[in-house]
Amino acid sequence: MERWFITMKKADFNAIGEKYHISPILARLIRNRDIVGDEAVDFYLNGTIADLYDGMLMKDMDRAVEILAEKIREEKPIRVIGDYDIDGVNATYILQEGLTGLGADVDTDIPDRIKDGYGLNRMLIDRALDDGIDTIITCDNGIAAADEIAYGKENGLTVIVTDHHEVPYIEMNGEKEYLLPHADAVVDPHRADCEYPFKGLCGAAVAYKLIEALYNVMQRDPEDVDYLMENVAIATVGDVMDLAGENRIFVKQGLEMLKRTQNPGLKALIECTGIDVDRLNAYHIGFVIGPCINASGRLDTAKRALDLLNARTRRDAVMLAEDLKALNDSRKEMTERGVAEAVNLIETTPLKEDKVLVVYMPDCHESIAGIIAGRIRERYYRPVFVLTKSEEGVKGSGRSIEAYDMFAQMCRCRALFTKFGGHKLAAGLSLEEENVDRFRETINELCELTDEDLMEKVSIDMQLPFPYITEQLINELELLEPFGKGNPKPLFAERNLRVIRPGIFGKNRNVLKCRLEDAQGNQMEAVYFGDVEACLKAMKTKPVMSFTYYPSVNEYMGRRTVQLTIVNYQ
Image 1 (cartoon, helix red, strand yellow):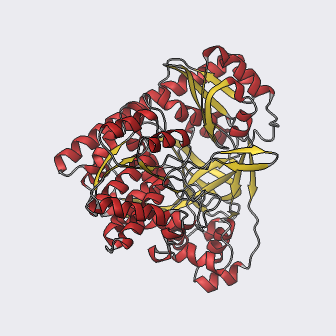
Image 2: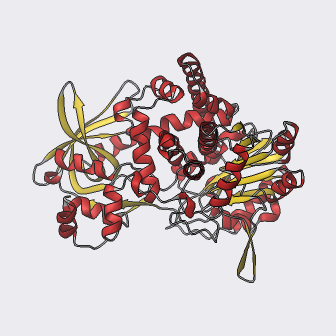
Image 3: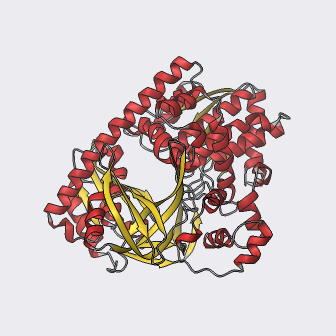
């Protein structure tokens, strides 16, 4: 079941519209996204690269830049250590490219998801020591690696941390004591003493800021590295950061650059996944390009994705892009099988009665547990943990719903885990196999979710009658892009609509098409891409319904028609 509600935020929409030459409808949509005040509205509509903040405002940025400038002059070997996901791979590439451009002696290392686990570990440090490395820079990791960094320092390494994760802390009598690693420089906007105005950057954006600052200090033109903004855009969307503030500018500009990218690997990946490059948008990064880059870190080694970004010839690029696409296709098949197995387990056992779903599938590949948990959460709208058997005990990933702080709840039964971490909406954990049932019982006993919490909320921007839906409005909605987390696609609604001639189409029978008619007799074409069989059944049972939708222009054989994409129905 869903609860629909209309966001009713107040403002003088006509005045805002006049001031910024936009319609009152658009003014209302901007207000609904909590963009308030002239400065914020102007930044949202018109922000450009020139409005990005100076990276030197980050705590320790000056130290990091000073150390690196000296190491480059002294020709000391530097190693970038990233992470195996889309943010880590792009952050690694940005640091490597930027440092190479300054003539640094630089190489990279990325941990193996299964063998090494997340972030910096002793094996990676020993490897660096064996290779005669002088300086390590971390990206998208390092803030929680205090012991490993201390070990590196004891052995004579210079260590610079660049990260965007929360700083670990111990709470004593309501006071937080932050556990910053003792590196030579720690650049992370989440440091309590960091004055940087925007906290929501991904790891690749922090890496980009470092390179930009370094180019300035070494008296090189920072515009030489502008092209790396396409990698920041890919990482920002792929790591599901809020598309607000600086992130919005990074993604907007980065997408434009990506359409004309000179990177052979990215060019080949866009081609082999069949994306229409002129229409490339945030959706394609999130659901086409991103999963291919992530698939290498899940099923193989993330070094393959880094090789793609580093490919110099078209032949290498095409080969690597096709490899990644094939890996992602097999990841999709494994995911579909895993989701089907999880649903079967839930439907045929007492699991169905639980408010927090703990699904143990020993044979599932541990790297896709999180994806499966996300899909099961969508289906049942409950917090979900998917557990799998690993070399040392049981590993799992959790995905949560708005009303359930997953990390806080896990802290209440931390004694059951050998390792865990995460935040409100997602988490990772390891535990002994004999504790699986106890974990399921305990986490459910502790659960205080009400039936209302377990009803998905559908947040509607406004009721929009058909006569307002014009091609002009649809064009204007593009000013709000890029859409994604923190800047959702607008959602409109209308009630008492009569459904005319609904039917299922498409070679995979996955599209429902119909016409919708309002009480005044205005008609619109509409399509639906969800569970089409269930929707068709509902439409035939009760031909007058309420819908939420998003309007777009459909071009077919040179004919342009306004069409609604149905999102929810009641």
